[in-house]
Each structure stands twice: as C-alpha cells, then as structure tokens.
Length: 252
Image (tube, rainbow, N blue to C red; front, side, top):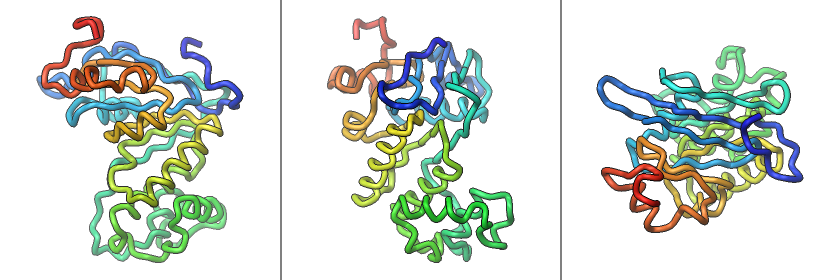
C-alpha cells in the first residue's frame, strides 16, 4: 500500500487515495496540470484554492464524472465501502411541494419518494436528520427552508447510507452558526470512525483548525502539508495569485 498509515488509535474504515499526474482539459483549457498527492486513510484532508482553480473538477474526476489523464487509485483497508458525496448547493424549483422527508426519500432509497420513507431506510434517515438538527423540520417544504437549513439537509443525505469515504464540496458555504457547530461535530464523528474525508473549503480558518492535511490547488499543485505549515501569508499569496508558481519552481 503506497498511502501513509491512518491516524493512530483509530480503526480505519475509509481508503487512502493516490492522485498521480492527474490532468484534465476542457476544450483548449487545462483545468488540472499533473496533480500528484496522497490522502491518508482515515484522515480529514482539505482542498483549498481560488475559484476556477480546479478543486471541484478534481473531486468530480475522483467520482468518475470527468475524463482525465493520469492515475487515481483507492486503497481500502478491506472490502470496498460506501462513497458519499455532499455537493456545494442544491438547485431545485422552490415552488415544488417537496418536504425534507420527500427529499431524503428521493436521495436515500430506491422506493419512489411519493410513497414515503421505507421501513428499511426510515430509522437511518431519522437519525441523520437528528444529527444535523433538522428532525423537527422534516415536514417543512424544502423551498421554505433557509440556505443554512438546506445545507444541513444536504449533510444529512450524505450520512445515508453510512459512508467510509466522504467527499464534501464546500459544505460550510451557507451554514449559520448552528450549522457550523453541527458540521464540526460531524467531522469529529467521522474522524473517530476512521472515515476518510476529502473536503473542498474556502474557510481557511476552519481548515486550519479542523483538517489533518491541506492541499493547495490553482490548476497546479502549490502545496501539500499540515495546515500549520502551509496556511501562511506567503503560501496563500502564491496560491491565490493569477500566475502561481508550482512547488519547487520558486523555492516555496
């Protein structure tokens, strides 16, 4: 296994991930340029960088949604497990008479949503809504929820079924203070369960507090290290500049 061992004293359930020379082009534009780094099994690994820097494209590549060159590999500790994905936002017609329960049914079970929650999935869905503080609003229409409440529902759907690899695309973007506390508690739960979390995030203060490792992308890999070592002014200036210098080219 080429990926470093997981955090000590935690039973690892998630995989390590290898990105090797991953490149992506759309038309004549190079979105990702020879990206190579590793995600440690059972860790919380953040991706940071400017808009258009390729973060979301990289996770879509991992999910098999975008063609690429190079190699992506998952190293599971045993049999392959469940991969969960929480998107950045939910686009839908707010006039639809779709309740929180309807949304969870549509996302988490095969049974048609209009038939309600199945007995098989109802307990897990109820538990997920309780964990994000939305159980008391399960009969509310999705269109009547605040942006932060909708984001918490998105987090809930990422909990069903329980995943061993979670891919989060800016999950904190619309969260209020209560939602932030919910997210931080979930992140710690996943860490203690040995789940691997790959987390795209703009909030650098949160990344510094919560991530085990952070990778900086601006079409190329700019850094990959512990947050306290790389979330420094000179590194961030390099990361968010229009013409970044790749690691090893400019001494940073």
